[in-house]
Picture 1 (cartoon, rainbow, N blue to C red):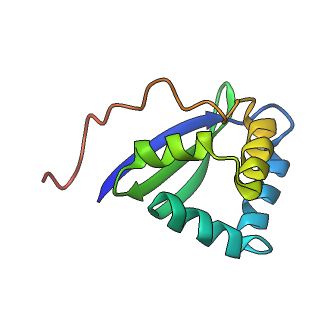
Picture 2: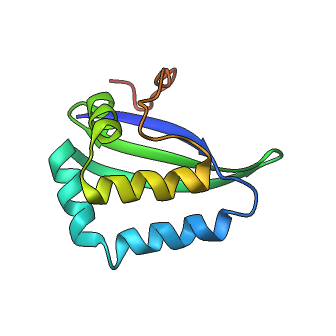
Length: 114
């Protein structure tokens, strides 16, 4: 299983909206969320909010057979739930999630070492 961690900004004034979005995914949209994760092959995903001097950031950690492929599939997807997710997250982060990330993060440390 491979892992990926990415960081996204939270636009000023969008912190509460981001928390409501996460809560909606875990409650009223949990069935759609489970279907999405199964479809793209994500076995675990966690989100963390980190306050830094420039504002808030969302750290997304995921486990999947191929996390980069999962991100590309999500960006290209036209499924109604995926479109809603990309639009909602995009309004919170100021990012067009219909475009796959141009570069993925480079892992430089792991413990315990493999």
